[in-house]
Amino acid sequence: MIEAVNTGVWFPNAQIAFSSAIETGFPVVADPTPPAGPCGVTGDLNAAGFAGGDGLFAETVCAAAWAEKFPGKVGIPVIFARDFCASGRAKGGAAGPDAKLYVRSHKAFSGQRGDDLCGIPQHLTAADIVNQLRRPFVILVEPVRNMNARNALAHELGHNLFLGHGNGLDDNRDGMPAGRRGPKRYDEYCDPGWLIPPENTELAEDKNVPFDSCEQSGSLMQASAGCSNLQPLQVETARGVARLMPGFVDTTPPPVLSPGSATRKSDRAR
Image (tube, rainbow, N blue to C red):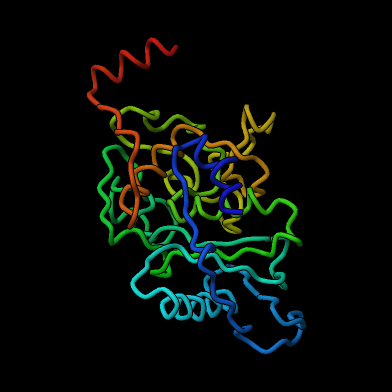
């Protein structure tokens, strides 16, 4: 599936490719909790919220098994569950970056790092390439039970590259476009509106933005993960984070972001 994610989503959009250790085998770990209640089948995970419950336990045992099989190898564990239970319609999950890297909003602890993530130039270090749980990981329902497994895995890997939910567009135009220095203000992590209270489930910036098509207004990072395209702002963020990951090889040098040349290129594009 990693090959499908690479060829169908990440490499055409952002020239990022993920590698897999599947050629040498991967660990199979026991169900972290005994089957009971709604999770009555071995291999089912209660992964609601992905910050606790079976999901976090599964990551812990998976990381331990991985370290034993591949000592010193660092990467993003992808954990396949038989199915999810008590988790709504979710078919995958991953935690985002530390809340301190979010642009300031009503989200607790946001705004403490200014524009380190949500601006160009970024100011991130390799120590930032972990999520709120201090370990990057993805949990996914087995492909046989997730008919959109390719896009779901690509979507969750996007969270590990610090992309939040959203259409990838600066809908309220309160930031700078891709390729220009300055604040980036788009989607879940980088727009001051964040999520609409009190439920905090609907993205403020994208509210009332009509969906026309995947090409026009859809994105891989929409909550449904139904589309496979990425917008330029998402590509810019993802590549900046990916450059800090162990083993990353950059085959395309970053553009020169001098204010003058960036403005002229933007003018020609219009």
